[in-house]
Each structure stands twice: as structure tokens, then as C-alpha cells.
Image 1: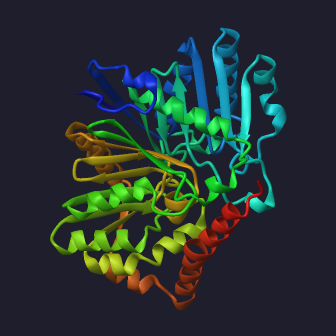
Image 2 (image 1 turned 30 degrees about the vertical axis):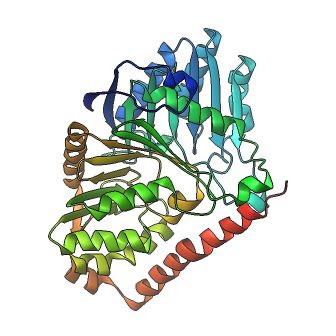
Length: 398
């Protein structure tokens, strides 16, 4: 775990509760890596909760640690804590509805986001969030499932998350409230055709909450990244699924071309082979531009971390079309030197378990058949999937 804090003056708060806070607020954070570091403090926060628990997950699976979380939620409800759980209907499709009966019997509330239907299957809630008493929050790339247990090196998927205090948990709880209310996925027609469902919320001068969602136009995450990359000298990105827009790829190549440093940690092992193949179709041009690419080898990589000079992005979003334009995602952008230094330390530690990809070795490894598979995977994920998702979003019934 890596911890830190910074003192900021909140200059804008999204809801009236936050606008009344005119005194200094202290932002605190702790970096968490893999399930061994992520799950214990999350369970401890639930066990310590006295007023409210909000849990939002894309994947929630039976077995451990899912059963430990359910038991902690039941105990919290028995203490009189308001407990609400939101899971994505597709991401958690393997979880039987009976799994939540003990929590519902105790008075807890459980909802599925966007119940399964063929005409809206492509729009998903990919966020991962836990907020307890609006005082402590956890977010990142992790889901609650057996494959996340371990240290990410000898066992279990490798992921990254943050535990935060200060004013941010209040804001995160408000975003959970919005998603919980819209769980049945009923949208008015004018909402579906507006520019975007995404938001950028200014929390302090150096913290922005970037909420992505379906709709027309660029997301706040893309706008923030474009702005930061235009003037960047050092970029370090660790993501599970890497299919950035043409503009982001051009910006990364431009940074390397003018003498800057661009380092990518991508998946050497992936749970989504088609995504890995599509990402690899971009390697040649990036390597020729001077971008350094590494593949994480010990376990499946599932992290989402972006460091652009002193700006740090952490949350649920990958750099692919789904996260940038289709899914509901939650990212926080911090601009704080101490946090950036810690994030770079985390990145450097992750590099120890990576294999560098060189241009010459990459050329020799690419057979004609592999090139065809990579191009086909790229077309499916960059062209077809977004097209189908847009059609489903626009065709939703009133």
C-alpha cells in the first residue's frame, strides 16, 4: 500500500451539501494493488459503517470474496446501516438472484443495472465503487470475484485501486445515487439524443470527477486526456484493454517523437483475447514512433492507471471505445505531485514483472495469420461494437 494526503480548498461542489463547506478539506489517499490489498480494507470499512454503505460493481461473483462481502453487508444492515448494492446485469450474469436473499431479508436494497434485453444489451455499467458513511470510498478497476484474490504476481489478477477520504466520498456517493435510481434503464427520448450522459465535476482545484456514459460527443475523460497530452513530456499508462482513439495515438507518438517518454504496460495475459489482439495491431506504429511497450506477464492484467506528467487518472475506464464512449465509467483525475510520484513508483514496481516489446522481435513474431486476426479484432471492437451500441442507445423504447 502507498499512502498520502494533500490539503485543498474546495472551490465548487456538485450538490448543496458540498457548497456549504467553506473550510479547508483534506484529501487522503491510499494506493491498493491486487485483491490482497484491496479487499481487506473494503471489508473493514463496511464493518465500521454506521450510517450508509453504497456498493457498485460490474462483476460480483459467488464464492470468495463475494460471500464475505455479503456477510459484512448483512451485518451492517442488522446494525441499522442503510445498505444498497448495484451490480450490472450482464457483468454479474452468473450470480443467482437467490444469492442476495439474506441481504434483502435484512432490509438491504439490491438492484441490477440495465436488466438483460437484446435491444439494449450493449450499454453497461462498468463502474466499481464502495462508499461507507460518505467518509471513505474505494474505486478502481477491481471487481468482487475469486479471480481477483491474490497478490497479482503469484496468484490472482493484477489490479489497482484507491482508498480515499476527505470531501471526495460525498461526491462519489451522489454519483452512486444517480446510478441506483436509473438502474431499470428507462430513458426519455430527449435524454437519449442529447450530446452525452457524461459529466465533469470539479471537486477541488486539483481533483476532477470524470463520468463517462453513452451519448453523442466526446466524454470528459477524452477531453481531459487530450488537454494533458498536448503539453506532456512524460506519460505512463497501464491498462488492461488498449484501443485509444486515433487522436490519442497521434498524441502519444508525438510526445515520443519530440523527445518525451511514453511507456505503456499492457496485457501479456488477457481475459479478453480479442481485445489483446486488437491492441497488438497498434504496436508497430507506436514502437516506430519511440513509444516503449511492455507486457505484464505473471498474471492477467486488469489495472487502469494513467500518469501524464503530474496528472494521475484512476478508476474503472480502459483506453478503448467501450470505456471512452459506451459504458458508464468512473474516473478521478488528480493533479498533485506527491500522488504522481507515488503512482510512478507503483508503475515502476509493476515494470519489474513485464517483458519489453521490441520492434525487431515484434516484426519477426507476426505471421500473416496473426496479422489477419489482429485486424479483424480491431474492426470488431473499434467499428462494429460502437456502431451496434449507438443503434441500441438511440432505439430504446420510451
